[in-house]
Amino acid sequence: MVPVHIEGVGVDPGSGNLIVVLKAENGLFLPVVIGALETQNIMVHLSGEKPPRPLGPDLFYNTLDLLGVKVLRLEIVELKEGTFYGRLVLEQRGLEYEVDCRPSDGIALAIRANAPILVAEEVLKEAGIKEAQIARQGETPKA
Image (cartoon, rainbow, N blue to C red):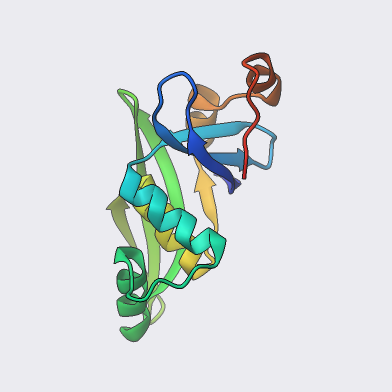
């Protein structure tokens, strides 16, 4: 598993899809298509905004916290037929649990919990993009 961080959130110029761009420690970028609501959930938190009412990921994080469950990490583990698959790794009372999730939902939760985001090496090999490839397309990830 390779640690990544959010490099930016934006629009894929080729398809018009909303994407979150993750940057791996090895320098590869991983663009992940996400929905409008998930984009909002991520952007609100990254911008430091405090919505008047909790958003879905805030509610889930607050509930986990109330129950004594810690978000250990998000793992993006597979790319199948163009779809990324993720899992949240949670801990409660010394026991770890793995929960299947969409990476976009997992990202929104992981950033609230200050938990690491990891990507399987095979996923990065298959879908990772080098910075030079992005530059050739005339685009650079924007925060």
